[in-house]
Image (tube, rainbow, N blue to C red):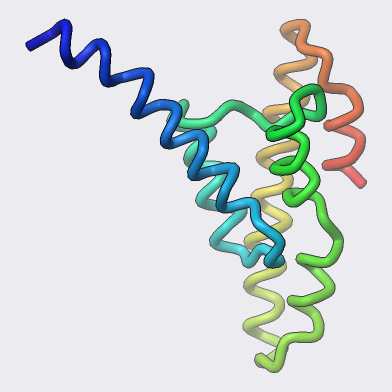
Length: 119
């Protein structure tokens, strides 16, 4: 049982990673997309997005895409709903900033990513 399980684990991990990259499609993100990615990173399902790998670069670029916020601002919802969604996105980005800061502290070359998340 264990050998077959050990052979399946890398495949499962690859599928989870592929789905996270696939979720980074062309559509703008909503607040729940930011939170979902954060918890996938927190639970170790996907790595912290960076610019060194092309697939990770696509995911990172989508994470910091200003169009996500522009679409929220122009959405036909109440101001209170917009404010709530914006607070969720900004809180999530703050958590990402914290994770990038820590990664830099332990020696990861993620300074550019941190600067883009802060911007």
